[in-house]
Length: 151
Image 1 (tube, rainbow, N blue to C red):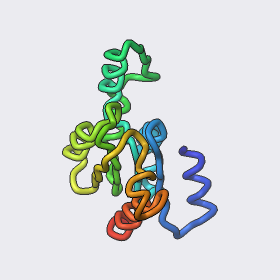
Image 2 (cartoon, rainbow, N blue to C red):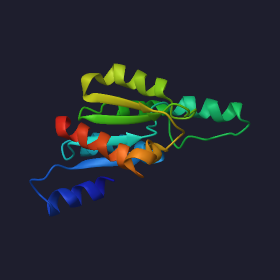
Image 3 (tube, one colour):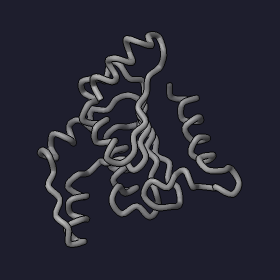
Image 4 (cartoon, one colour):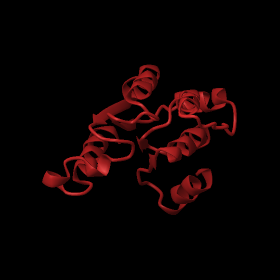
């Protein structure tokens, strides 16, 4: 992530640069943030990982063991250091990257963090209001609205 952001920043100067990440990709964006914070203007994440310990506990209840690659304290320091505008899309039926965990992060980050909850499952934002707005229509409208006011 760091190399990609550095390269794009050099190749396309004087343009706004953001990260769009989904689920596990949000962990990469969050961990890279302390090194790239001066180079990116916003982050958009669906199924945003905010609480690795909560995810481990959830899967343990399901009879599955997950080993984190590092201490969750290191991850939490990175994610809680995000200062650029951050949009988190949460699904009402997501049991892993929950709306409640996103709200707890928002309480720490403040007004730079915007959360939009939709009816659906993990990573189904592109299907929201499919009949009226088409595949991805609702999702793209939400992103455009966020970017209009936050970048």
